[in-house]
Length: 329
Image (cartoon, rainbow, N blue to C red; front, side, top):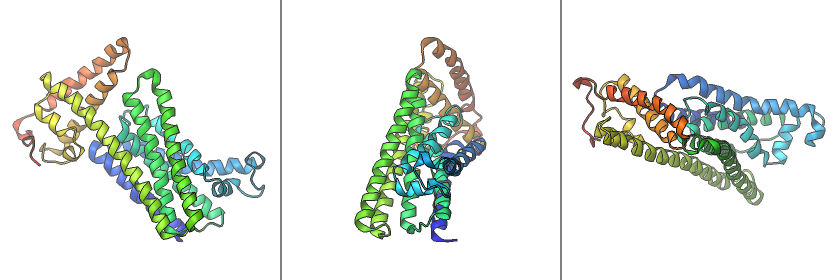
């Protein structure tokens, strides 16, 4: 396999596994795998679908009549590297946002990364096999990180809109997230085009710098997502502690991603997983209630009451399942 094919595949595999493990360690939900696979399949298929459609409409795309015009357009118009991922990422992530698997910005970022990387892989395979383009390995790594960063930004924005925006503002908030992600991608693409114009597309220093910027943006999105969700979990679970529903250690352990993915705070693995899912669901649903009209808030408050009762029972299990003392690292 040539470098032009091997590097995108390797980047997709490494970053996808890392994103999956990030969410798996926090949620332990096997039933989210089909959703992740579906989002990735959508992203991977979009370039081929666009290529097939473009081949039938060359006069609208302004490309040569022979063959598929889409790869040539990707090479000639870098802005499409920003616009097209929004189609390949925004639609499937917005669809997943209707499910219980996308609860906040961190899970949205994971779904966005999966869709963005799959789109990037599909685009690379299509362009490399149908156009005479042999980029350097470092350039391919940057392009994978570019799509991952744009996908993570878009997914995190959709997750944030679902968690924090009032119902009447969710669609504008999602559109704002798409615009922000496209703007971020445009800046990265502009930087890449400028760098390549000055130093050449195969410049190792230039491509490593671009890859570093893309990785920084990607990590920054996940860092923001974890920080925001930490505040939500800390505030909502602390309220449950004050109400006497939950013990104090819950508000100390659950908000911290680093602490809650460890095993020392609860003995049995199956119980620990259920507690993680339940308490996160309780906190996020309570947070969304703040923006609902009074009638809807009263209705959905019944679900919060059921979650609260289940949480009270789970954390009051027999002594053999008692967690380690708070603060133990």
